[in-house]
Length: 388
Ligand SMILES: Cc1ncc(COP(=O)(O)O)c(C=O)c1O
Image 1 (tube, rainbow, N blue to C red):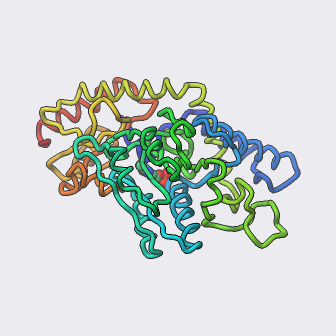
Image 2 (cartoon, protein in one colour):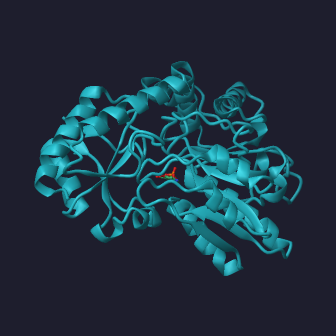
Image 3 (tube, rainbow, N blue to C red):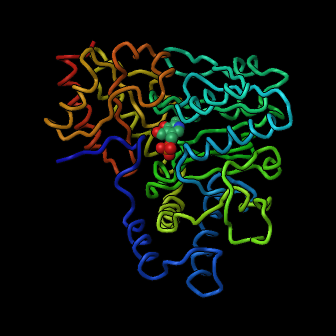
C-alpha cells in the first residue's frame, strides 16, 4: 500500500474527469485557441474561456479577461512581483515591497533578484509558535515607497492561515498580492472583500488540475502598473511590433497548455459541484482528527493547533528528516516530504532549520479518516523512538 501525503507539492490523485478531459481534448480537438476560424480552434477557445470563468467564479473576481493563465504559481508570482517592480523602476521611482517570513522561495527569490535593480524589501517576522504574522506588523513595515505587499495565505511548512482579510484592509491603496498556493480550491477566498489586487495560484495543487497549470487574477485596472515579463505572439494585433495592452493577451504570449487547461476545467467543475465550503469543512475535519490522534507528548507539531490552519503539517524529529521520510516510505508506504520545503525563513521562524527542516505531511480531498488514523498511528510508533 502507498499513501500519498504530499498534496502541498502537487495533489494526487485527481478526479477521474481530469484525465478524461485531457485525453478528450488531445484526441478530439487538439487545436490552439484564438489561432483559427475552424471549429476545433473555436472549441479550444471555449475551453479557455470556461477555465477563466470558473476560476473567477470561485473567488468572486469580476473580470474574466483579468484571469491570466500561467505555468504554475511561481510563474504567476514572478509576473506580479517583477511586473510591478519593473513598472516603477522604469519610471525612475523607488520601490519597496513587503513580504513575510512565512513566504516561499517563489516570492523570496524574485525579491532577492530585484535587489540588483535597487528594489528593497522587508520581511515581516511571524510568531514562532503559530507562524501567524500580525497585520499590525505588516502595517508598520509599509513605507512611502511601498508598491506591493505579498503574503502567503497558507504556509506550505506549518499550514498556518494568515488573516488576509485584515491584512488586505491594512494595505489600503497599496496593491496586495496573495499567494494562494496552499488554499486555492479548498479555502474560501473573496478577492473584493479581502482587498486582493492580485491572486496567484497553482492549478495543480488544491484546484486538482494537472501539473503545468496556474494563474494570476488581477483586479481590473491594476494591469496599468504590472509590466509584462514576456512578449510574443498572441494571435491578436499581429501587425504591431509591440505586445498588445489588451487583456488577457498582454500577459499571455505563446501557445497555451491546452491539455492541462482542459484538465483544469474538469477539476474546477468537480470542485464547484462539491462546493468549496464542503471541501474546506472536510479538510478541517481531517486536521482535527490528526491533531487528536498524534501523541503530542512525543511528537512536536509545528504551527497552529486546530484553528487558523490548513491540512499541511510539519513534524519535528531528532533524526535527519530525510531519513525519517525514507523510513516512512520504505517501511510504511507513507509518502511525505522532508527538508526545508523552499521556505527557509519559515523554518527559521519555527526553529527547525538547524535540524535540516521537518517531515511534512499534507492532506488532499480524497483522504479518508482511516488514512489519517494510519498516518498518525505510524508517526506515534516512530516518534516513541525518535521524536523530541
Ligand atoms: C506557498 C507556496 N507558494 C508558491 C509555491 C509555488 O507553486 P508552484 O509549484 O505551482 O510553482 C508553492 C509550492 O509549493 C507554495 O507552497
